[in-house]
Length: 373
Image 1 (cartoon, rainbow, N blue to C red):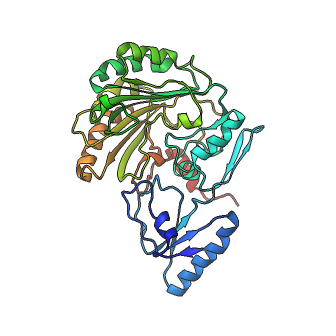
Image 2 (cartoon, one colour; image 1 turned 45 degrees about the horizontal axis):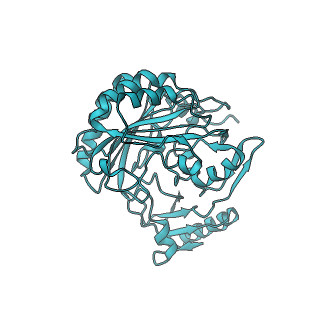
Image 3 (tube, rainbow, N blue to C red; image 1 turned 180 degrees about the vertical axis):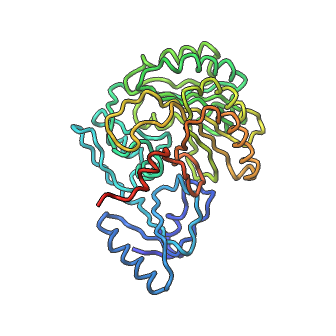
């Protein structure tokens, strides 16, 4: 069904989570069932024919990755109502609708002792995350027999000691452990402790589906380096896991920067995070995520992380001009470039219209080849 600018459906669909981009398509195509898609596309074709103007179809569920303007030459295909989730616990595979979010998938999967390899924000759609740059082209689930996770926060003046502890122990954690260490400019809002409101903090987000043991060396070293202001590490569920990254819950006008980094990243970690640690820095969140060691179950174009670490930074357009933000990204680039693994995690670059190097060069080359007759 096509709806125009005066409808509630149009207004809701054109408010992406990344609100840095205005969306004013000619129409919004609202689909509630998979079988609605074909007749709706027929409506789009008829509209284009009657107007004499070609129309680009732009699919969107949550708009976390919205980056390109959507104007009158487009129809926005709103897939946010396609939220079916089916879990096969025997094969450990999920089949989901194009609008299903990671929070919905993991809420269903954890009933069977499983979880999906989600990103950090629970409201991201699975389809956008995967096709926009998620790692892996098969949607497997993993066992989560004893899920432990948590967020730890320290004052930023402890950054050198914390990075030293992190660097010396990150290589010892178990293969199931996922973590990120970040510099975070703390807003005066819950769930942050009042002691950190309006200040710069160091943030460790960490999780392990197999219990507390494999993460213990890293946690012990960082707690010994400095006493955390806040520490929520412990047993949790999928909903608790979704909270440890401390993402903003509402639409945010922001742009981001990201890059896959190699195994030498611990050597540059302090210098890199320090570029965002000043009180007046335009980058409000800069993190290094550790993703090395994850097991590979499938063959395919991209089924393993292209690097051991990910650099990721976010800056709000509501607080700083784009030029100042880009200068902050450039300062960070001058540091991380010596650990560059050669590609960008596409779905992590907030507010970008496109990410040409989201896939490794050999995969891009293969994808451009003509199919064999």
